[in-house]
Image (cartoon, one colour):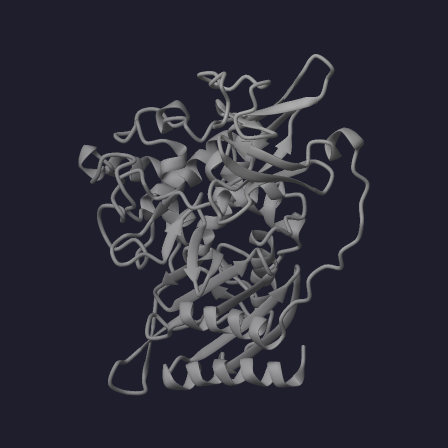
Length: 448
């Protein structure tokens, strides 16, 4: 990156560390799968932290649990619509679905019963599930967003039960190792920061505990480094390394529910936080445990992401700092678009392009690459969608109003495409073409 950009990023980092009085603060920017800048302020012990110094991730752990769950789904071992009873029988929250647990809409209590789980040693799954009686469901499943750490304790057990081994072993072997994230661990190992609370009215510190959370560990146990978290940020941006398909990661980033406690800017997909900021749609997660704050966000549209880690319980604007580093990078060094190059398009596909009409409303059909079509109103946004080929004359909607719906190309006796059937709506080459099967027919007298 340009020296001027690096200085601007470092100044923003330094200002946050000094004004918020945090013992140490590290941050980084990723682009197109690569760590392109990192910086550190403060001290861990007597030394400056670096890209290999561990900090606790807190709830960023949840995104890795979600990835393990989606791997099970992609293997056909479960469906997101399955009630949890199908996989973990005998709970008091049997009707909550896997998808609801992932998106914080299960209605489960936010915290586990008993002592403050983040500061006390955790019990095993048997003890946790025994403590969750019918009163642990606070809201009707599916009713609304209600953040639940407990829900991810449940999902961790779901992963462990399907793989017949502890959840972290699954995450390590199936996710971390393939991505080269060897410094992401359930407990600190090697160089690491100690967690502190900073006194609100004096420049003194209080060490915070970091016990093993037991069955609640999938909600926030893991420790990691700038280098490893940079790789994870890139993963959520689409550089999946084969751990998941790009389509599945995009599904994880798709908004399922919004946090409507205020005018909403934040919501959740499947284990992933979704943030709207200055016209961007970002994905990632924040994390908070006693002594630590963390954040990781990526813009899949530009390939730019940012992350921050600090060893203070509170007081640091970790999310805003991450947003600022990301947007500053793209503002100061905007990424260049890929060069346009011509491609090969089959003649039958090329023949589908051009003007189509939904009733009297004109649309343009375009080819994107080798197997994707876009159908867009000629003016305004309207019901614009992209479609991926599923058969000789069938396509499935990828986004917009027609997500998941089937587009079928209809042909006349000569094999010429004369209409598109899209979720029962008929598109024709001319408005209400009488030669096409327009529902309700076309007035025989025609336009007048």
